[in-house]
Length: 173
Figure 1 (cartoon, one colour):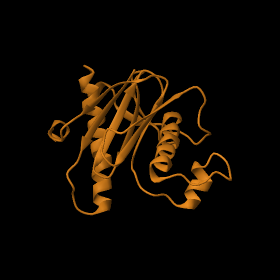
Figure 2 (figure 1 turned 180 degrees about the horizontal axis):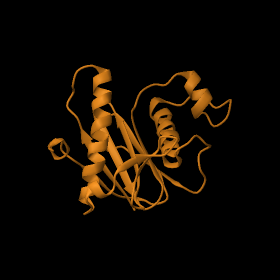
Figure 3 (figure 1 turned 45 degrees about the vertical axis):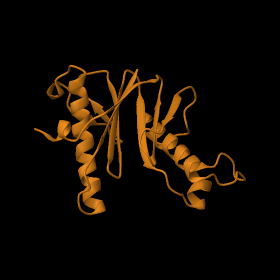
């Protein structure tokens, strides 16, 4: 079981400021999603492993968070999970060859294929909490729920639900 929660932030200043706000709102969205599970977020503080992977203390619920542009998403699961969200755009040939190509002579793919592979790679890293080859035996689900973006989930279960949450639900204190 994997549940995904997504929200869109208002544009706010510079790209650096937008990125910082997205990071804050990713945590707020996660806390809101925990509350939606009938749990008190105060009982499950957000912590980080030595390698920076976020986790919830005092529970077996696995989490992952991501943000890109104005969009923020988090995933909750009963098994290790990773999520990545990226705007569909061209990637350089160097990135294609170094990270995304499955063989040295594979022709460069289009923007959609490149970002699909990139989000699979990133979701895999977030699932494990460290860099490694793409895992065998896990499910990658790439979803086009947001126009112009790809959202990929890496985990052992299937996506049970995607819930779009309006901004006010996570910004009120």
